[in-house]
Length: 202
Ligand SMILES: N[C@@H](CCC(=O)N[C@@H](CS)C(=O)NCC(=O)O)C(=O)O
Image 1 (cartoon, rainbow, N blue to C red):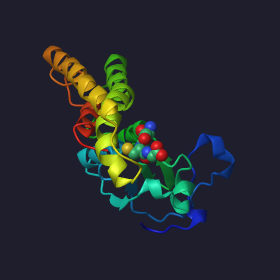
Image 2 (image 1 turned 90 degrees about the vertical axis):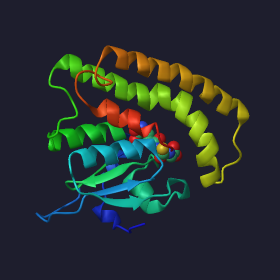
Image 3 (image 1 turned 135 degrees about the vertical axis):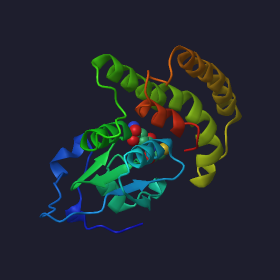
Image 4 (image 1 turned 120 degrees about the vertical axis):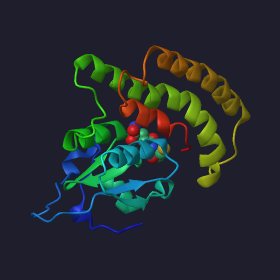
């Protein structure tokens, strides 16, 4: 883990907004840095967005379960990913990806029109919420995360529920892809970046 001075950090939890301080870059260009866990689907979404736009980033592995005080200062919510970019420290993968999209519009991962943008956002949210809670959390958190973080043993009821849910959700994705070229419409989008991350592990 790379140590950063607390005075250089911007906390990002709205509940602790009074503690926020904007990093002073004083005109110096700083390396973009992503605090992440390789197996986290939320982190993978951000890594894929940056890669798609050919934005160079330094990856710093953050074992969030060790609750390092420096990490909690960066994101008091204690979650990865955290992206340090443009003198800001940002959390929440969906908001981060939209920020990257606005700062680096090419190649675009969001359609131009309101309808298309709505559909991409709906699907990203569907993966982040429904798919993640019903599939990823049940299958991968149980099988991989618990072992990694030494927080107990997999619960078979959760694994069964995850295995059942994944069939139903993959059917929905197959149905979507029958109707369109890409998940959210005619072009590749953040929805693909999001779907891709759930083919991996957290
Ligand atoms: N809504 C957050 C979710 C991030 C998240 O839950 N990350 C997990 C790793 S996959 C984490 O850091 N969990 C730590 C915790 O919940 O304490 C985002 O989109 O960035």
